[in-house]
Length: 297
Image (cartoon, rainbow, N blue to C red; front, side, top):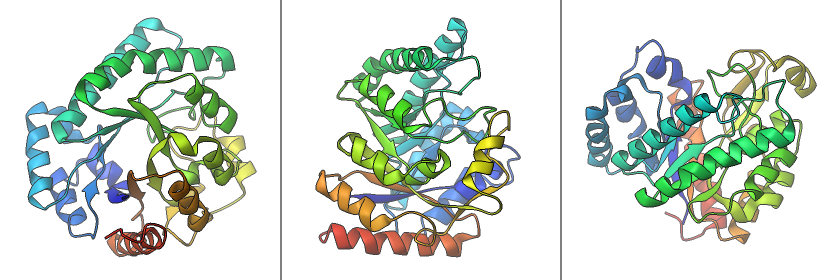
């Protein structure tokens, strides 16, 4: 049956840049929620100290939770082969981090959509790098999950495989038991596309999911797409919001996931307006999951 996790979307700067929140403080906040686990991020400042990995796992497990997924952002579309090899080594270290945390899923991305990169070359480079990581993932018993991503918080350019056709082509290039898809419905809107159309194309490859709802606080999707290239991080007109009050049709999403026998982790990206909002999103998703998986507790 599906299980719920939470991701500290509202606290990324505090945990990853200025250090105004400790990982232990986030654990205490998140473990008060009615969820089963905490999705981790490789870029937490304190994760630079490898000796803390097992300590954080112990803290989470003492609350009766687990760390099922690690979120990280390899850049496999760089034109320099030496740079790509370093990214492969980073991904392998993140796989080790996932294992130390007790996780089973580690995110992987294609890389940045650099203007000079052709479609054919980008798919080839990303697939080559992901395939290079898969034997190590298999040795550790971890599944690499490719997300239909928009843009890493700290990247200059958007995701290379942001568009549906490119994403599906890349997924089709990788056939391995330790590879699957992390589906994020909100990110499809940012590509100017319909999330359900994407889901119907790749639902049999989905093993985990990011649950969120997105809003544009000004302008239109077309405005966002005009300004996304060359903008560091997320566009200013974009924001996350309470799940169930945005654009996503969670009834249709869960109906399709139930149809294909999905039983993976659903990680919530929310809470930008406070923990009360995150609690409401948790309650919304538990109710919906109970509808489509009646034996879910």
